Image 1 (cartoon, rainbow, N blue to C red):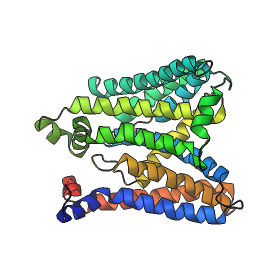
Image 2 (cartoon, one colour):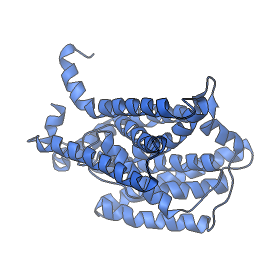
Image 3 (cartoon, rainbow, N blue to C red):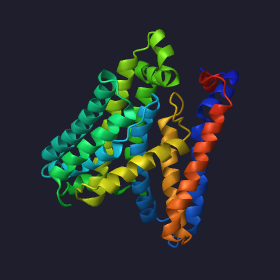
Image 4 (cartoon, rainbow, N blue to C red):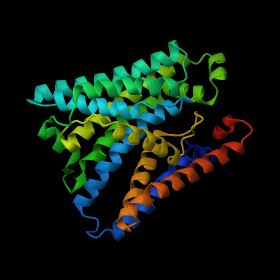
Length: 329
């Protein structure tokens, strides 16, 4: 039970998430107020589809970053899942269900491979995931030499359309992932172990924390979420494409969303919910630039400045601490 004395601690623990939420709400309000068509159901659905896609990839990245690692293959797992889904997620409802299961299992396999190489091979996560990302892209290219394929129309409409009342279905998917994946993970022994590993792996090991298991599960779930994002791409585009540019873009944008969401790149601190709002905020920044007719050539520069400012703020917070465990004190 939460007591009044616990609130300062909880506010410090979740301040990154709260700031990302407030930033997103303010930016989206400005976007909706200045959109030529106003906040219609179609405008909200289009914005939700783009934002939720990045939010899912950001969740995948967060799980690894919390262990003081980084996954530079999430974008390529997305691309591989997209290409695989364009082959498998078709036909009857049973065939579609089996295809979805196959895509998700492939994502888990990619994440498990990353985890095993990092844990057993003792290689740096950044080196490991660059190498495996290239391999995953090669598999995607073998599956889809040219863009094409299809997806079950009912599934695509269910995930990218609208619920009764004009509510974007993508938001329901995002909420389901948070409730089914993030919250149980965060409250589990492994989830707490992952945060401890990110804060200090040596201290976690000396305290009897299952370090290797925590890392493996983080990479496994990262691959699973990245494959969900790839499946969602297929439902949006109704096709598969082995695009290196898309994979690299979503990888970089996922790191941006993690930073904007208040997750420490040093590990041990932050929340996937914060990364979700960071992703929604990052996407809204791009939409705002479009609404205010900023020249396209200037948009990457503006987004880069925003990201750099967020990184500086996060680093400044850590520099003020003598011990990273003070983040929880």
